[in-house]
Figure 1 (cartoon, helix red, strand yellow):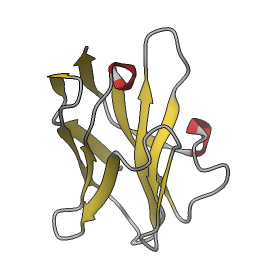
Figure 2 (cartoon, one colour):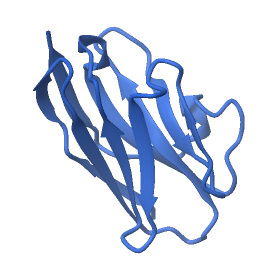
Figure 3 (cartoon, one colour):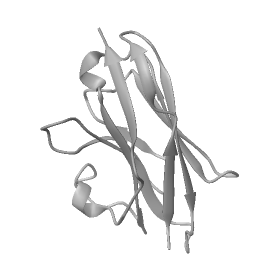
Figure 4 (cartoon, one colour):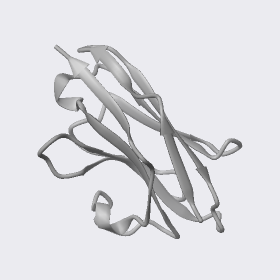
Length: 125
């Protein structure tokens, strides 16, 4: 069973930075699609950054240029470096994964079978 455990959330002022981590375990294949979603109160869950099995990373327009996703294969951990944070980035951030190749639309939450428990990010103005 795939397990995803997020960490690294917190509270920062606008313009600050945070780095989220997602430690993965239980993969039965080397081919999987993995990424980050977020959900603000009263809003739908939205994709932030998705890493395809070949290593290509796709970003939502709202975070491109400010957020960077990366993966440490030795630790089987996915990171999300968030810079120039804005109050509108405030949300619960979730790590998600599916076995096999990514399927489109990439940022559709229903495409992902496995989810972490989430980590809260709060950005104050």
